[in-house]
Amino acid sequence: MTDEARADAPPISIEISVAHLPQAGMPVTFEAADDECEALAAHLGVLAVDAMSAKLVARRWKRDGIVVEGRMRATLAQACVVTLDPVREEIDDPIDLIFVPETSKLARIQPVSDGELHLDPEGADIPETFRGERLDLGPFLVELLALALDPYPRSAGVEFAELDTDPDPEGGKVSPFASLKQLKDPNRS
Image (cartoon, rainbow, N blue to C red):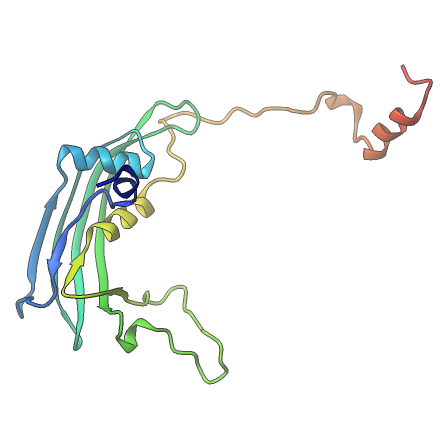
C-alpha cells in the first residue's frame, strides 16, 4: 500500500457481512488497538486517543436495509484552546445508523410536488448507503467520534484574557478618512 493510499484509508475498519445477518441481529464489538488509537488521533487532529470501543447490534431493517444500534465510548486528549495543555475528554454516545443499498429508493430524497427538497433539521437523517455484501462501519464511527469532540476544549478554570488592540483607546472614534488625509497632507509630522 502506498503512503497516499494509507493516508486516505480510514483509521479503523469494522466490516460486517450484510448478506448473512441473523434474524435476531448480530452483535458487533470493537476495541481499538494501540496503532488504531494512534491513527485515530492523527486523523482527528487530537493529542491522543487512549481508548475507543463500540458495542453494537446490526440487524435487518425493512426489506433490504440494515440498522446498527449501540454505544461508542472513547477517552482522548485535546489541546486547550487557551493554554495548549492537554484536556482529557470522555465520550459515551449512542449509535443509531440506518444503511440501505445504493440502489434503494430509500437512499434518495424525493422532491415534494413543488419540486423542492424539504428537509426537517430535527427529523431523522436519510439512510447511509452501501454497495455489495459487506459494510465497513469504521468510517461512520470515526465521523461520529469527530462530531462528538468538544470544538473548544478548555482546561478547568482557564479564561480568555481581554485584549485591547486599539493603540489610542482615549482618542475616541477615528474616521477611516483621517488616515488618508494624513497621507495627502505634506505638512504632517
